[in-house]
Image 1 (tube, rainbow, N blue to C red):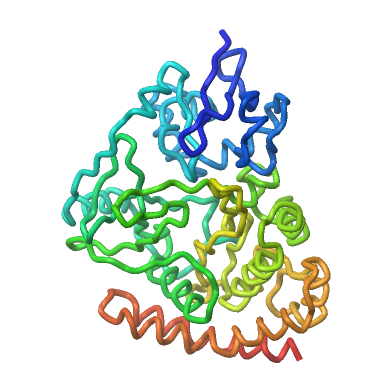
Image 2: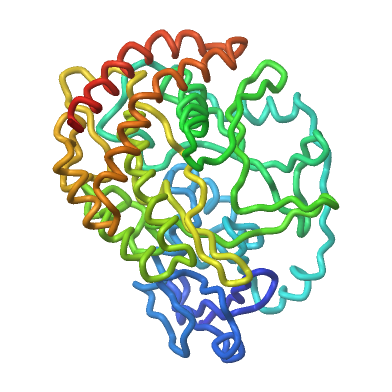
Length: 422
């Protein structure tokens, strides 16, 4: 039996997902009226045009909206009476609140979706703490597993809204403003590591999502401000459409790493050159993404950890960076440390020199000296910024331990990077 879902952007029906049989992947088509007057595409991979995009073209964007953790996705599917791979069925039930400004619903529910009131229900620290406890089920250690950091995006998280200093659950048409993360379960004090890494980067002028470590009753968590939400002066929360580079380049989440066939620097540069409203700034933002992951010793700077904002007025730009976390706090044995996104064809820290940055500059269309000077400046100042970030949260459990483990390795790492740049 044929099925159809309405697709909305910024509160307007812009097209539909269609499938002919249960369990099948859907196609996507823009409405004729939106083809004539629309300015924001569902995805850069799905530009506004009078065509029906086939399943293989639509799937990467849709899968990028859902949890990568198969266990989490399985729980969702069980609760909805669907199977984990049935994207259509899952979005039919959960699509009223998605990353960015996209929403999905059955056509008969469009009026209900648009007419809902925004309801914010105050929630106390004890309730938030209980949700955090539910996400803890195994001990953590100081050994970084496998090659990559996120293990396929398996971080548990939930979203809340912060208004006038009070946390709220968002109901009806209400939107959330912050992501709450207890950290990766198998890595000790990972939430602290992530915050310190991002705080140090921010201190050096890298555009990253604002983060802090917050105590809820007896639980501590990483709290990150959503860059796809804007809080107005009247307390209203507005959704901003966004997609990550994995979605924009039509890759499935399992191909987010370059080493597994995922996007390369040249692919990201191509997206910016074709679509960005502030091309030079965004090319430099992509360069910063590569540089700060190298300088911080962060192994997980893949294509799902950098996104584009697609504003209602039609502007397109790189979003603040997120999920930036050094791996230098953790043991790796004899393995050579590397970045997820190669620079000039190299991923191993010790092999990335001026020659590689020269190639990267050519890819981005920027001056080599600009990139080298930026990377050198970050490497020279980053350890001190990290140390200051530790000092700023000394009351947080694990902060001093993370600093003591990380700083000696980080200083040696950054010293080597400066020497490699010549």
